[in-house]
Image (tube, rainbow, N blue to C red; front, side, top):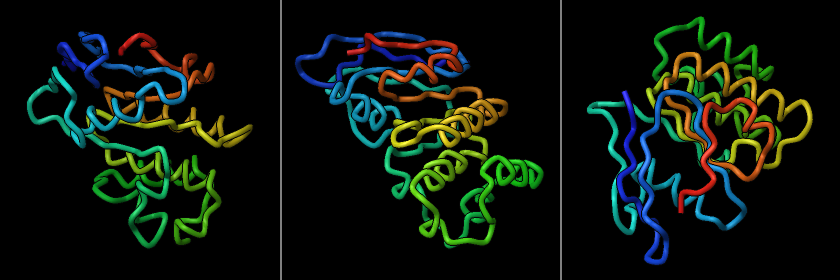
Length: 183
């Protein structure tokens, strides 16, 4: 199973990019304003590229986590955010243990860092492709460590984890591939 990027151009002046992504954690790394969020939207199917395409295997399920955690949270309780679409209750319990937040609290009552972690944990439903935009933005110390731990845990049952990030050394340490020249 592969994801094929074929002659992808995000803007008129970008250089066409072709690549085959293998299962694993792939990080698209770049500076601020380099087009990572645009690339995320193209991968998620929310925006068309200027030219080219991304080809997923037929019938593949994708899950997307936006840079702003509030854009990824919809349910009235933490447990609802995590359990949505999950058939394996043990997986939900493990996610809650990793998050260390109360299951019955309203997500908007959590701190920014906790909401960021919760938004990543929404991928617990187990898509075949997990797309995460800027997962470490605004996180420091223990919360950053938890986010990395959570992404590695999710990768245990999500074949493709595709992360769009600023130059974070922490992300390169958990990735199988880092792509810096994609535009």
